Image 1 (tube, one colour):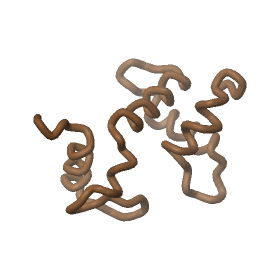
Image 2 (tube, rainbow, N blue to C red):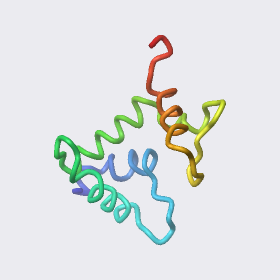
Image 3 (cartoon, rainbow, N blue to C red):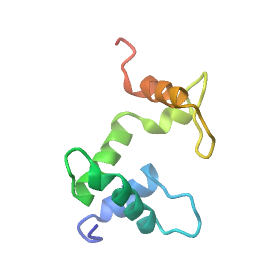
Image 4 (cartoon, helix red, strand yellow):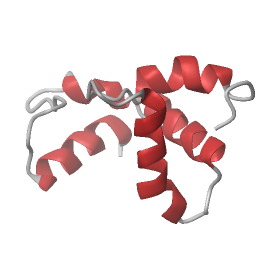
Length: 99
């Protein structure tokens, strides 16, 4: 990621939406690992910038930060969950109530 071209993405959006939580990694190391693990094989073969912009937009659009606030089973970072519980929590914040 070009630091000058993506200043807002690197210094504001990603640290808020996709923080790394391991103390001995820098944010850039973490995001590089994530892109190399997931972004390089994305369906649309997105560039690094496109991949992280899309990830941020989805986080913002679908209010993923609300996963930890939604009852009856809030999702918190660092805990283990069954796949169905994660899927249900994601559906609660991404599917409109009228659907």
